[in-house]
Structure formats: structure tokens, C-alpha cells
Length: 101
Length: 140
Image (cartoon, rainbow over all chains, first blue to last red; front, side, top):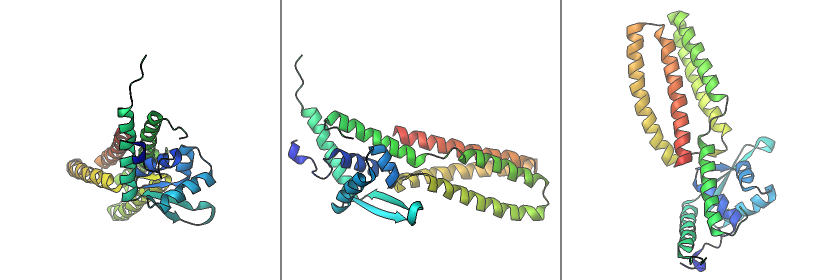
């Protein structure tokens, strides 16, 4: 396993966190992602746009105005990408040399 | 998640997934007190109401339950995964059918006062199964 096998889209910690949340549910609401990832509205919008552009996530808007909600879901491609990325991370951990005392 | 440490990233992935599953199965604080109070109220009403009125009460009760379920769904900021929900739904349907048969037998044998027991039994089943589903989702 090499660093090159890590997914460049979800290698960024915030996007990795967002994808981890999306695969754990069918739909996740914007404000819940923002609170858990501890990011600003604009930062999360940017990260989610990157995931949507890569085809890893899809967006759905519900309602209008202040009461409107934005929901995100992981696509099958996104789910596979996260699975592969996490497997690559685990392999990196397993292959890491044990530090000498 | 700001870290580039692989161990910390993997731990954070697991934590975020647990939190999201928990949110998907979380019920608001008011959900079960409202259901319990309504159950006691409705089934208590059924004991004393004339038979002709009980039929309309059943329609109101069904409307209330549908509204209650939709209110809970709207409250949560994560929706559970469809496949897992369908599996749980089949289990709930099976248990609810058995429970319905048992309590129907009790009502048939014991008469109207047993309807309060029926309501409480269903409310407890809803509370218990909901809590169990949430616990299992968090620890999956």
C-alpha cells in the first residue's frame, strides 16, 4: 500500500469526515455536518461542492428561505471511494514500522 | 477533523459515523411522553365512549400516529439508511403483529378496561424498540 493509493478528493480531513458521516446514513442535513465537523458555513459549502463535483455526494434542498434545509447523501461511487480510502489508511497503519524504544 | 495523523483520522471516522447513526435514530425528548399521554387518553376515552364514537376515535388515533411519526422524522438531522430501516421494519412488523394478536385476545376476553393495557403495551413496545434500535445503531 502506498500514499498514491489514497483518494485525492477525500484525502482532505474535512472531506473525509463529511464522507464518513454521509455513508453512515441515507441523508444528512447541512447544519448537522457543520456542527460535527466544526467548520463554517462557507467552508462546508466549499467542501461539499468538491464532493458533489467529484460525484461522491448528491444534494437535495427542502423548503425555502430561513426554514429551508439542505440535505446530502453519499453516492454509490462515494461509498466505494471512502471504503477504499479507509482500507488504504488502515494498510498504512498496519505497514508502518514499529518505533524502537 | 483537522489532523493528518492516520490513527486519529481513523478514530475520527469511526466517531463521526457513530454520531451520525445516533442522530438518525434519535427521538426528540417530547416524542414518548406525548405518545404515552395520548395512548392513555385515547384508550381511556375508548372505555367510556359510546361504540358509535369509538370508530371516529380510531380514525383520529391513526391520524395522530401518522403525524407523530412524521414529526419525529422532521426533527432528526440524519435519515437512517434505507436497507437497515427495511430490515428493522420487517422485525418490527413481525413483533407488532404477534403483540397485536395477543392484546386483541386480551381485549376480547377482558372487555373494554383492557384497552388501556393495550395502549400502554403498544406505547412500551414503541419506546423499547426505538431505544433498542438507537442503541444497536450506535454500537454497530
